[in-house]
Amino acid sequence: MSHWMFNCKKVSMMVSESMDRKIPFHRRILIATHLLMCKYCYRFKKQLMLLRRAVSLEDIPEDVPGRPVSLSKEARQRIKQAMRDYAPDLNPDSPIT
Image (cartoon, rainbow, N blue to C red; front, side, top):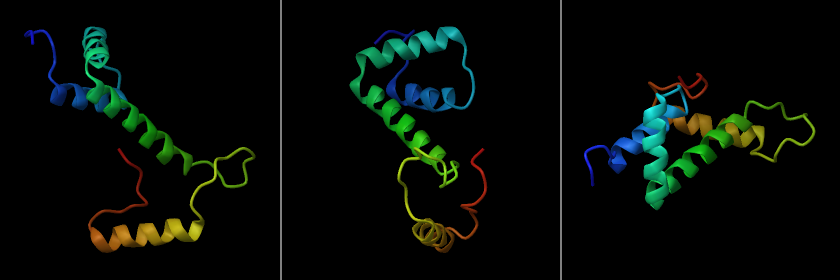
């Protein structure tokens, strides 16, 4: 692999970063090139996009027509409580930054 190509570890970090902030054009080109050649990093990017979409669905009010079916309010509360019990120092209700 050339010195101008990124390795998978670097690409996975930059793919994640690119979903939160804009990265320079030349890096986007190198990432895109890597993703064309590496099915594992491409799959990782697709999985991240799926996770972000799933998390964002919780922000949609339940009474909005066409809202995808999701967990019941009780199930979400049980999951949040389990997260609190597992990691009491983390607040599952706080927004992800």
